Length: 150
Image (cartoon, rainbow, N blue to C red; front, top):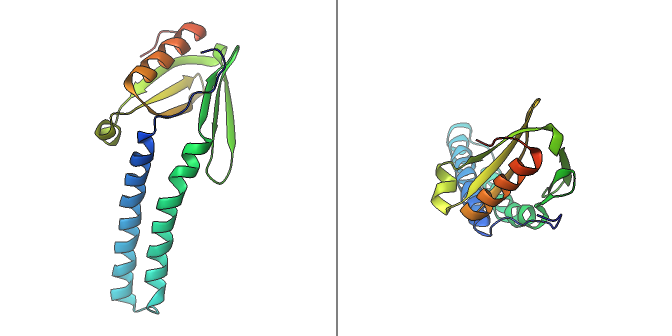
């Protein structure tokens, strides 16, 4: 890469919505159980469930819009955040190795994560990459960092 910003694969939105939906469903079930056992005012469990559903619906597109990564001259830049913006710079001379990972949910959507490690541990993760982009970025990071990748 020449410093241009990379974007995540759009399928990561479906992944994040699925995870958010599962979490919102769990919150809704917990609110229902509390409503049955504790008898709170009727709108409290409904309000909790609606807030969870709203967060699960709104946050993924905000995250997707803000997520960027770039392999620059001397470092890897990661920029992300839905409500709070975070930029992480990982100098190439600090990178120990780069790992490509695909968990069960990633596999369901055909996506990969790249995890960058330094001597201090996990320094950054790039989620939502397709197979070819994950391989390309991993190889480029390994090359510029002068490390062997996993």
